[in-house]
Length: 305
Image (tube, rainbow, N blue to C red):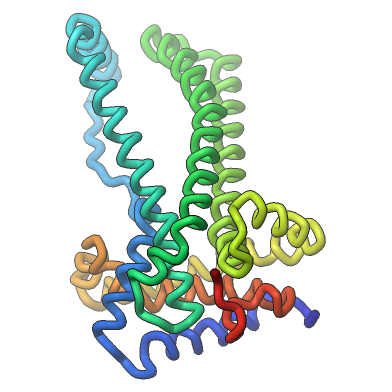
């Protein structure tokens, strides 16, 4: 096995982008692969937006809080059922996104690995593997909720009385900080699991035709034997993300935010950013391929089930 590098896959990934998207340039191919890329990133892109209008005056905030609390208590008979209904809708929508996203990850991988623009073939071929990935991710999300929600609830129970009575104290603040740090560490852990699943476990499933837990077991052995290399990979991913983010921001600024408006449109944004997502997918695949021919999805014989 050759020396593992985080920089060598860059040139290979760029060359893959050229092969898949520009040699030759085919608009229909772009939109087809873009659809697969859109599914692969469904529910994972975008950020929270909102306007935060602060009230002038500390007492007004407390007064508004008390009015809101009183209103909720007085109308709990219809607010509670409505809240439960909305929660069920949100959870169902989230589950649907995870299911579609799991299909999309195999579809996009198939397109990048084989330089093909197909939707129906990978959708049906990888149905079982995608379902296995879906259940793994769903269980992972539930575990995250079971661990994280009690911390959030405890923080709210601790912070709300101090806020209402304006009785902030050192002990309570330190507990809130400790709980906040714990939430951050838990979030980082689950983010890394999702990241490693997307970048490496899904390709192993693609190559072996194995279920997600089995592929994770194989990757765990690879990770433990090359822990330093994968840590360097994750750190280098931060650098790549910053560089790509600056490039996208530059395009948005040069076009006077016109490009940014189009990038914000679902599916259209995935088509416009297809070179970026193709590079990202190809980079992780070429990095994994350095660990041996059995991890190379680009080989002619490395075609999944």
